Image (cartoon, rainbow, N blue to C red; front, side, top):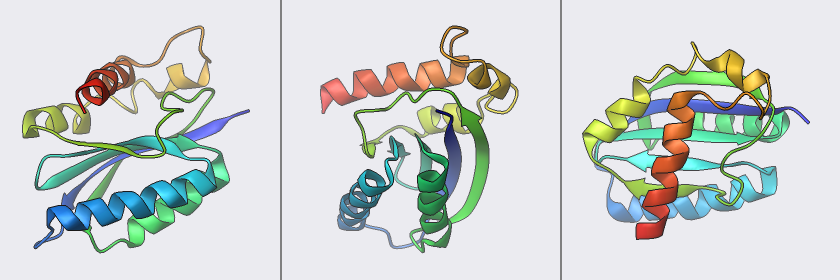
Length: 144
């Protein structure tokens, strides 16, 4: 079954507080679970990086909500492709606050250049930037 994955970076809207992020996560997790979408959200205090994946229709519905959200501006899409397997199956929306340098790493990674590897299935391996994100998330989730 082919899936779809999207990665983007955006700037948090002015005046965003911790309570706003908490409400966003509760809401996102509920909607993502209904849509069968999983992924991670990284936040450095002023910018977001998000990678999410799932069935095409579910991803489209979630992405439309994200694009309409007033919690962020300057959304820059980094990746929007079909994939053969998912990587964050246990996380309807994991989130962690990170240093800006880590967010910068994922927002400037080679997402499109390596997209073809995602289409070739699990035996060829995921692109290095996605493998790194998975490893980062596994380590970060153990610390939470």
